[in-house]
Every structure is written in C-alpha cells, then in structure tokens.
Amino acid sequence: MKEQLEQIKLKAIAEIHDSQSSLEEIRIKYLGKKGQLTAILRGMGSLSAEERPVIGAIANAVREKIEEALAERMAELKKLNLERTLREEKLDVTYDGACSRCGHIHPITRTMQRMTEIFINMGFTVAEGPEVETVENNFDALNAPADHPSRDLQDTFYITENTLLRTQTSPVQIRAMREMKPPIRIISPGRVYRSDVADASHSPMFHQLEGLVIDKGITMGDLKGILSLFAKTMFGPETKTRFRPHNFPFTEPSAEVDVSCFVCGGKGCRLCKGEGWMELLGSGMVHPNVLRAGGIDPEVYTGFAFGMGIERAAMVMSGIDDLRLLYENDARLLRQF
Ligand SMILES: [Zn+2]
Image (cartoon, rainbow, N blue to C red):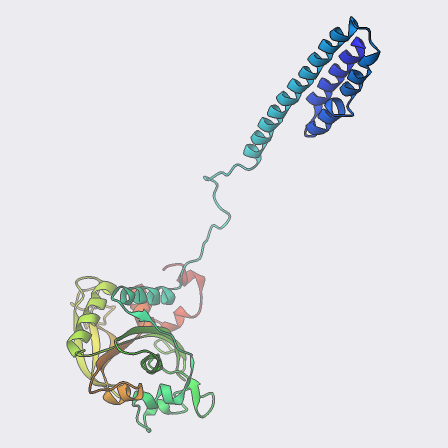
C-alpha cells in the first residue's frame, strides 16, 4: 500500500507538471470522491491497528504534495498565460499606420462649419429647411415681384408649377418666422440651386448661409455690429467692413457688405484685384411685407437678415480662383488645404 501511495504521488505530480490547462480534471482523478487516493484510504479498513496510522500519515502527506503541486502549477500557468497575452497583444505605438494619407474636411464644408461656429458663439441657432421648396416660400413670401427675373424658367429649376429647387436659403426665414415666436436669432446654412452654366464663378448648385434676427427694437446698428464682429472673427481682428446701399426685394433698406482684403489689408493686391475690398454678403432690414408673410406684426417687431455665399469665402480663403475646382474632387488640389 505504501508503494501504491508513492506511485500515485509520482504519477499525479508528473501529470500536473505536464498539464497545460485541465488541472481540475487531475484533481478529481486523484483527490475526488471517486479518486485514486480516496480509493486507497477506503481500503485502509483491512490494515492492522499498527499499520493504519503509518499509512494514514503517508496518505495525508501524498494528498498535501498533490495539492501543493496543483497550486504551484496553477500559479505557473497563470503567469505563462499573462506573458503570452502581453507578447501577442502588445501594441507598438511607434508603428507607422497603414493609412498613410488620411482625408480631411472639404474647404466648403470647413468654411461653412467655421461660419456656423462663429454665429453659434454669438447666440444664433441653426435652422434648416428643405431643398425642394414651394414657389410661395421661395419667392412670394419674400416679396419677390411677380415679374422678378429670378422666377424665370431659365434661372430656376422648377419641379412642378408650385415647387422648385430653392434658389436661396431665404425660405428658411419664412419657415422660422411661422414656427417660432420672436425673439428669433437663426442662421441657415445649406445648398441652393440656379440654372446656371458652370464657369469660373458660377455653378448650378452652391452653398449659402442665411441669417435672421427679429425682436422688438432691432435696428440697422445691430446688423452692422453683428456683421462687423463676424468679419473680424472670420478674417482677422484688423478686418474693416463697408456697407454699400443696394436693392433686394426682401429687405428695406438693403446693403451689400464688403470686407477689407485680409491679404493686403486694403492696399490692393492680386486677390482683391487691386480694390482693397472684397464683396462678402447681402443684407438689410427685413421688409414689412416679409414679416407679415411670416405672421409677424411689423408694427411691433423689426429685424435684419443677411445671406452670403460659402463658395466665395472658401475660394478667397484658400486662394482658389475657379469655382469648378471645388467640385472636381481632384485630390491633388484638395490635399493642399
Ligand atoms: Zn488685397
């Protein structure tokens, strides 16, 4: 029996040492209720009273040895596993990634995002409208005369007699006035469509950013203040603004706004074509008829609106002189910005 115990010990320890994972199986095989060591201890009844404590002591020692070996191997396997994980899953942060040429935001999108951000910081919220608009929202409600040339089939993409691809972002003003109550302070960036042949300065699709402020006591002074601050934030703190009288059907009075050239500071250079100024946007005090069309009483409220082309600003800021380049998606050009 002594030899049997010794053999069990040696066999169990050898198995434990070779084991890669199934230690629990080995434990059950030797130490479990139906295990080999347990079976021997059960047979101890046939031993003499002198032998019993001796064999009992040996059996206990064997059990301890096996348990010890199991614990040791368990710790060893744990360590080996950890080492393997560390070796196999190590992340080399100095490794040059496979994406050697990552993309970036298109100049038009970036310009639009920058403009939007500036107005949001001034407390404006972004309003959006559909690109397929009603003729009513796009022209009638904006006080466009029935014979206004932009209504012509040659200038505008009509879907039906009463719907069209919006020619400006201004219909969002009408939607905002009808949905919101003053005070209103929104901007609306988006795509607009005109039936133009693509050339260096025209495209049948382009982007605008529209702004609208309506409240009690809004004046032309607010318009000038907001737009001057916008120009300084967008083009640099030295930027000057110039307001020139103009005529738009939806505003009265109306003004076109120029900014001093941010390259030459107003002296005149190639970018500003020697003028020292660059045309930025159209603006004015919202016409009472437009306020009425939006359901707002012009006797109580006043407001101003402005609209600017995103492409023009994007071109000026990136020094591109042909609008078509922005839409050709030639990576050689786009990578430069
Ligand atoms: Zn200049």
